[in-house]
Image 1: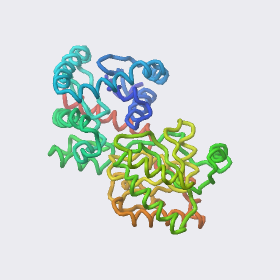
Image 2: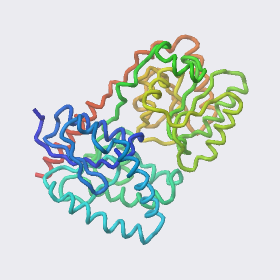
Image 3: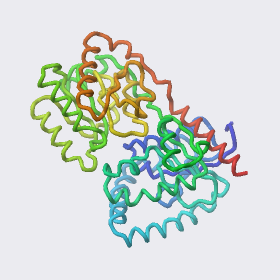
Length: 398
């Protein structure tokens, strides 16, 4: 039986982009809310349309995840949003009409909780929860297209001001949100994300087909796995790796995995330069079967981002039994293990030292303790803690 009779409308727009971190978060949250029977009813709302999912199976197999839906809608939606953001009159019209559509569509769900997993809230007459994963739009606007900042900045501010409750991914981000928006810390709850069960330690034999295809050795390469974009600190990663190779400190190659992001021309030029020297491989976006194997087989994940609200790749690598080189004082350091290496992300010399230390530890056999590494975080826990927030806002609205 459900723990409490609650009706929740979950914003499902991110499910149209299932390869993104927020798409992954939305899907796993919905699946586990259903699987654990934490709600009386879960309704999905995307792009002005109500989509019902009455069981975990129907959610997994629903049309929002089908190729035909994505092909018909994802490209069109992306183009529409870019068009609106670049034209003042269209943006004003969009911002005027959308709340009216939302209010009409969602009117029948009065008495439910609306939860947006992706920063923004629709017009809704009832208790609301919004997940704000980070404040990169506000703190680092230079790392985003101007039209994205233009479209989202004011709406995120509005969501923070009007939401009944805010969820974020880490204690570090909770403090940042409270300070940035000047709001009561009782309105903000930190609920950590999780890595899927597919991210687990694997033996060299289990990884062999992928490693053989790439001509790389088990636990003998660096891995970068994220979108190729400026805030991921790739220019400094490449500079540190180049210095290591030129000084003869390692012969580990570096493997770059990730889709092309905004304003990444300089980053791709650096990656191409390393590839041309035979020191690197750029795989682009890899499928869901290959990525967990790369995590398990890597000697270290290099992930010293300039800014992250959580940094899910670091957790996925940890759970896969792989050491992580990540940024000191960041949200990622919050759940780092004693096996991880913390560096100063803006100092190339610190990155060099961290990468050298990773090679030394792995070569010295000190990586074996990582093979059973586990974070203790799970999507079931994320769903339970989120349901607790729903109970809290329902109680506050009575």
